[in-house]
Length: 116
Length: 113
Image (tube, rainbow over all chains, first blue to last red; front, side, top):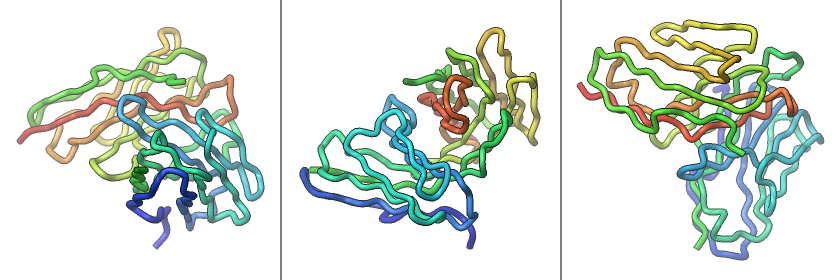
C-alpha cells in the first residue's frame, strides 16, 4: 500500500550506541523531513531533504546524521545516543514546494526511542 | 523556535458541541496548516490556508486566518467522540525555506459521549 512507514516502532538502546531510524515512502515525494516530538515542545524539525542527495539542517540537528541516496528512503542516525535524545521521532514527506502555496506533509506513525 | 502557539492547551467538550482553538504566530507566513494527532499515531493533515486567504472549510472544520493579528482559529462543529485528539497548527514562514514547518505545542481535545 502507498504510504510512509517508519521502523522500528519502538527501540530501546544505551547511551553511546549508534542507532538508525528508517523511513520509507511510496509516493515519490521530493521532500522528506525528520521531527522529534517532546512534551511541551510540539514537533521540532531535525533535518529535511528537498531531493535525493540534498539535505539541510533544521532547528535541532546536533547529534543526528541523515542521508538520502534514494528518493524513497530517508534514514536518521544517532551517532552516539544520549539520554536527551529520548523522544518520539516522526518522518514526513510532501510534494515539491515550488510556490507560496505550500504543500501538506504526510506523516509516519513514529518511532518511540528510549535511551537508557 | 516555536512559531505557533495554540490556545487553549486543553479542551473538554461533549458530543454535539463546537470546539474552537486558536493559534498565534510571530513572523510573516506563506501558509498555515492544521494537523490532528490521535494517541500513538502520526499527524494527519487537516487544512492548509494560504496567506492571501481568510477562511477555508472542510466538512465540519472551519479555519480562519487573520494575518494582521498573526492568528488563526480552527472550529470543529458538532463534535464527535472520534474528534478526540491533539490539534496542531504549523506555520510556513516567509523568512525560511518553503516547506520547513514550525509547529506549536498543540491543543488536546477530549470529546465525551
